[in-house]
Image (cartoon, rainbow, N blue to C red; front, side):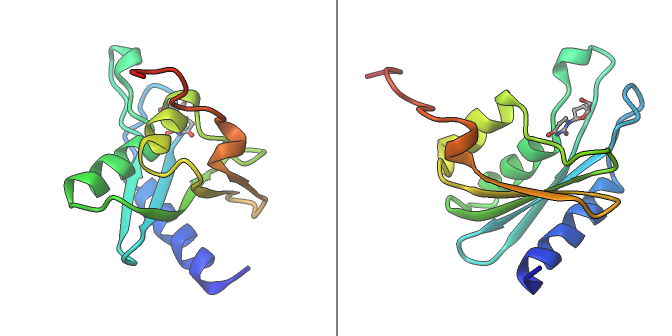
Length: 131
Ligand code: THU
C-alpha cells in the first residue's frame, strides 16, 4: 500500500482511540485528507439518545469545514470488525456535499481493506433537490 494511504490510515487509528462509544462499544476512526494536504480526523461520538450519534466520518468533515477546507482527496475509515466498515447513508450524503467523487479506503484491525469512490456508494446525491 502506498505510504500516503498508510499515513492516513494510521491517523484514523489514532482518532479511533478517542471514540466515545459506550452504547455500541464499536469504535470507529476517520481521517480525511484535504486538497491542500491537511488531515482532519474524527471518531464516533455516541449519545444516550441513540439517534443523535455522530459517525467518525461526519465528525472529520465537520472539523475540516470549520477549519476552512473545502476540497478533499481521500478518506480513511478504520474499525475492529470482520469486514471493513462501509460509510452509512447519512455520512455518504454529507461527504457528497463537498466531494461527490471522494476516494474512500476502509481498513480493519486485521488488515483487510476495501476501497470505493463515493459516487459508487451514492449516485445522484443532489438530483432534483432545490432545482
Ligand atoms: N459508525 C461510524 O462511526 N462510522 C461508520 O461508518 C459506521 C458506524 C458508528 C456509529 C455508532 O457509534 C457505531 O459505529 C455503531 O453503529
